[in-house]
Amino acid sequence: MVELAFSILAADFAHLADEIAAAERGGGTIVHVDVMDGHFVPNITFGPPVVKAVRKVTKLPLDCHLMIENPDAFIPEFAAAGADMISVHQEVCRHLHRTLQLIADHGMKPGVVINPGTPVDSLIEVLPMVHHVLVMSVNPGFGGQKFLPFSLEKMAYLAELRHEMELNFRIEVDGGVAHDTVGSVVEAGAEMLVAGSAIFGPGGAEANGKSFLEAAREAEARMDEEEDGHDHSHG
Ligand SMILES: O=C(CO)[C@@H](O)[C@H](O)COP(=O)(O)O
Image (cartoon, rainbow, N blue to C red; front, side, top):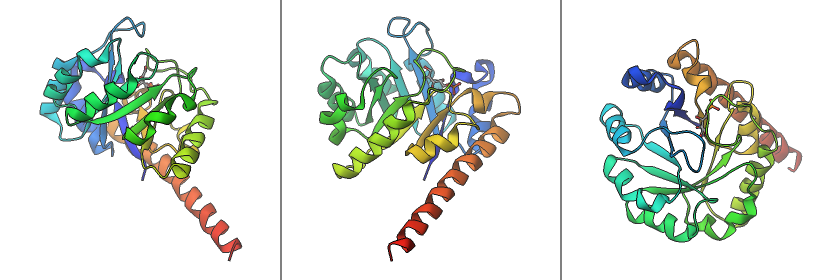
C-alpha cells in the first residue's frame, strides 16, 4: 500500500501545526522532515528543535531526511526529539554500515538515500539492514524541482533486488513527485511517496493530499489488474 509522506519544507512555517493537520486530513500518513545544513546541500532548514515541536502536534511517524555532513553527531539528538525514521545519504557516510547501525541502536528505523548521480549497486551490502531506501528524483536542496525520469529505473531495480535478495525494505521517492508523476513512480515500485509542493501548494493540503493519493491508488489498481491478467494468462 502506497503512503503519502508529506514534506513540510513546502508548508507555511508560520502555520506549521495547521498545515500538518490539513495534510493529515488529506490522507498523509508520514511527516517528511528535510534537514539541510548548508554544506552537503546549498540550503539550510530545520534541526532537532523543529522535530521536537512537530512531535507535539502529530502522532504520525516523523521521517527525517538528513542532508547533512557528519550525521552520526546528530543522530542521538534527533532520537531524543522524537524522530521515528532517519535517512542518511550514502554520499556523506564514510562508514555507512556503522551509521545505519547507530540509527537502529537509537530505536529508529534506518534508511539510506542516494542522489541522482549515485548508483543503486553502491547499497547492496547494506540493503539487509535498512527499513527503507530513498531514491532522490531531483538533486537535493530545494523543493519544487523537476522530476528526473531516469530515477524510475533505479526504483524498479531496487524492487527487483528486494525480490532476489528476499528482503522487505520499502522504496521511497523524493523530488518532483506530483499529480502528473505519481503514477509512474508507483508503477516503478515506490511505496513511500514524498511530496512537498504538490501538497502544500494552491488548493490546500487536505484537497491536494486526497487527489494525490487518488492518482497513486489508481496506478496501484492498474498494476493489480495487470498482475491478475498475467496470472490468468499463465493458468
Ligand atoms: O528533499 C527534498 C529536497 O531536497 C524534498 O523533500 C523536497 O522537499 C520535495 O519537494 P517537492 O519536489 O515535492 O516540491
